Length: 263
Image (cartoon, rainbow, N blue to C red; front, side, top):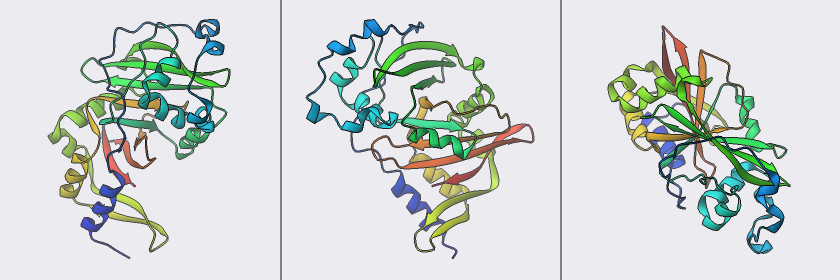
């Protein structure tokens, strides 16, 4: 059953309600040097962690559960960071995304056997990416090393250059939307996925409600394959509630274009 775009947009807005909890502020990334993981230096066996009953038993299973505690509790963050490293921090108003190519790659977020996950802080003005490498050591997720790389030396380089301009320039953003722009969402009433064209005015209103991406974004690298030069998707996430919005792009006519939004 077809619905008005205003009704659909209101559903999307509800799914993007800002997280109610506050995370640590994202301080400017310092000059990064690669630090190798020294298990002995962690002193994990000597860590005076919180009382057992205050830490959820599953905190070290899914990385997302660990990340929530790491970014919301200063003491936990300090104890789960290798000595000498600048801890990873993220402001609740900043965008956390997963850049991927295949829907199957999103299943990596639910993989309890994962041992390495990288949080990438992409800083647009510096054309740099600071990679915070988290490893599971003795069953505990720990920030084990930090390194800095040029944005041009990454598999996503072409897409990231486009994304930087897409975010910074409203005119370029409008020109980079394929018409008609399709939005997709699950209708509980119809018990099915529903697709409908989205007017540019509704897109502009929706974009204004998205997390701030103007200075930096945080991309989670679970190990998803990044080899395609013609298709990229970006899942925006709310860390505290698991809600998300997907933006789908492809490369055609010598440019990247947004062609579909999925809630």
